[in-house]
Image 1 (cartoon, one colour):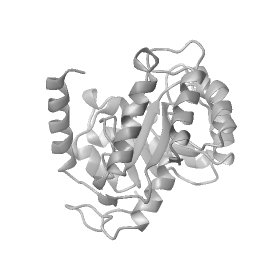
Image 2 (tube, helix red, strand yellow):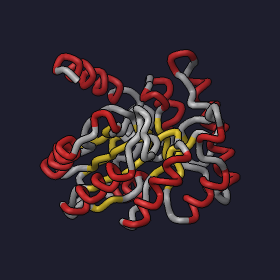
Image 3 (spheres, helix red, strand yellow):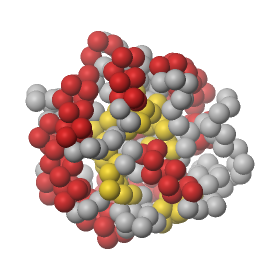
Image 4 (spheres, one colour):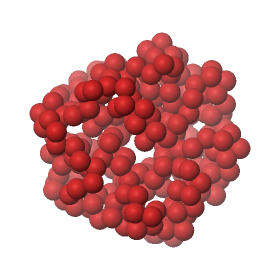
Amino acid sequence: MNRLKEVWLEGKTRWLQSFYSRPVRTVPDAPLVSISFDDVPLSTFHYGRPVLDRYSVKATFYVCLGMGKKSLFLGPREVRSLYLEGHEIGCHTYRHYRLAFGSARGMAADAKHNRDELAGIIDGAAPLGFSYPFGKICAGVKRRLGMHYHSLRSSRPGVNYGMTDFNCLRAISLQAPSFSSSLVDFWLDEAGRRRGWLIFFTHGISPEPGRYDLTPNMLEALLTGCLRRGFQILPVGSVARILTAQTAETVSIQDRGCFSPFAY
């Protein structure tokens, strides 16, 4: 990413964070890392899950139950298995909703559909974490979704530290074509320097990765890099609970008292 684009993206991120923000003081005792997966391809279950198990790491899986070509993505059986094993199940809308061709109302309705379906699979435990499909965000979406989730994860790069907008959490995209140990080290250094919370995300885990995927060896390199530094790796929801418990400022600047994770 060139410098001009970086500056533009950072400016847009800060602008988006100024609307319907949920500021939470993000100063953990030691840097924290979360590993998350979007969509989620079946390859992640078959090739990524064993790697996570080997390192006793729990991750967050932002699932779309209505993705096209359903046979290529997690279904109810895999979702329930991951849930019972202690991983976090998050919502990513039902049909991987395209905000660019829809509306905030439409995305919220599609997210509710997915959330209700997932709740039926995981013993009524409706997901409290959400990831924006395609990383697309607008103020209306933040307002509508922020009332029903403990965190909304974006694809805006950066470390979450200081007063963080939990309706627009930053995250680092990892993809096989651009993956490198130096990239991982850079962001881990940033998390250590700022004493913050670093969220990584990818999609599938496969020996033959697509553009947005990683190989099992890459996932293993990521985990060993985090653990070698002594960083604790926790699901997004676990970190969100820890940090919100440490601050009294957990409600929206503009909609104080609006957050209810249980009511639509």
